[in-house]
Length: 285
Image (cartoon, rainbow, N blue to C red):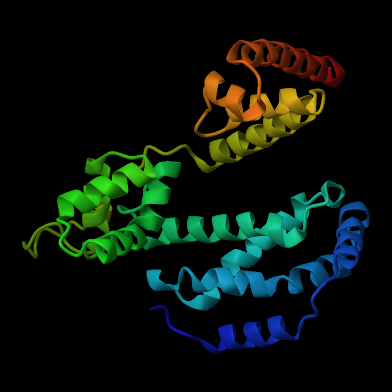
């Protein structure tokens, strides 16, 4: 369990003292922040939702991090949610912010749990954060289940291979090794594990450029999606933008139309998206 520190106690007292917001109050504050960049409005809406940050942080404490660190990361996610929230969509801010808060804490855990432990794909993240809970649930239902059977059921539930589950389980149970530890027992060697680390990751300036390009592309796509009808946009989202894309038949069943009709609507929608994106290029030039 992560240690409890005085900073956490102070944050919790302040969060409990913050008033709850009615829907109209929340919308008014969000509009003031969005339209006027009113810092007092931002403070009010984030302070009122610190209870949500603290509650979410509690679910990550078993990874061994101080609660104050988790709350700080959750607050970063809360600010990100506030910067992106659109009050016109008639969605409560708490519902929208929950995803950003949880994602921020998950990223923090994955960055700091261990250099060699965390997975990077969404499936690996799901495996990392759900393996213990799923294993406990399976063993509660069948205490005689072997590791092989448990790992098979976990793999099926998350959508990864049993080998991935086995590797992740061993990583989560293995002790961390210090990067400053010597490579061998030879005291005269003087070589530490850190000395053998060679990073092939992009340089910080490339990462920043990629991030900017990604944000620009995401914005352009969001603008282009507004040119589609509700049905066209829904089909594009579940067929092209979802992590686990639905089949034509699945979409047809969901929308009550034939899969051929889904295909026709999808083709037309993609053409409209392409034209809209090209139109943005023309406007920019």
